[in-house]
Image (cartoon, rainbow, N blue to C red):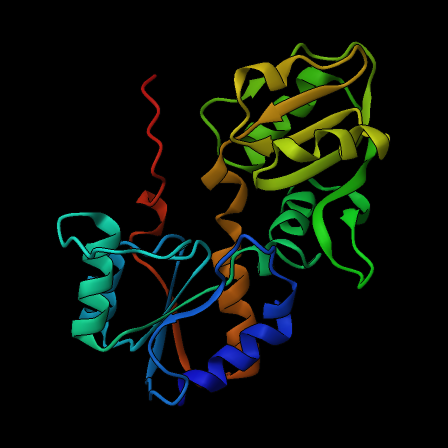
Length: 260
């Protein structure tokens, strides 16, 4: 199988042209003409993930986060990014990222969050002209108290902790979500009528929100990791007999550790 065949299948789901202008989704190492007998899918492109690809014979690695966001002037093998670059080139591993491309389709990151919560009537939160966009918004089947919603989030996302603003007093029905670092969409969530906005990477002052609205930070990794299984399912749908697997280290891939 050619790398380009797999890439074209992924881009049917998450078109490269819709990525944010600051992003670096796409193929960053290798050629579409390279041959691969299998694909390894992970969350971050780490040296350990490349080692895993070499060990299992995968010549193509697909991740959510890009290995490179901007140009580099020096490759340092002691730095995680540099080490991954060196290992990938030496091992003949092609590296592809579906980042904001997978964020902006409703079947991707934020849509997965909304479905995991159990929302209904799900739509794109920050909709663009071509029908894609960041975030998602929908309604719970029936209203829940703020405390019940927070417990639901802990259960559905397997969380040990949630950072949130002061809980609202009224029952919560309408919820907006955005995977990853979604602080910039707080205003969009409020305009969409959401009583709760769920995302990751919120700084301290972002928790200062008006009465009747609350935010919850469930973590960057926790909000986005579902995309790995989504990408695997999509590739398997397109190529039922092709070998595609998730990283064995996926569940230990969160860069943030919690000491409880």
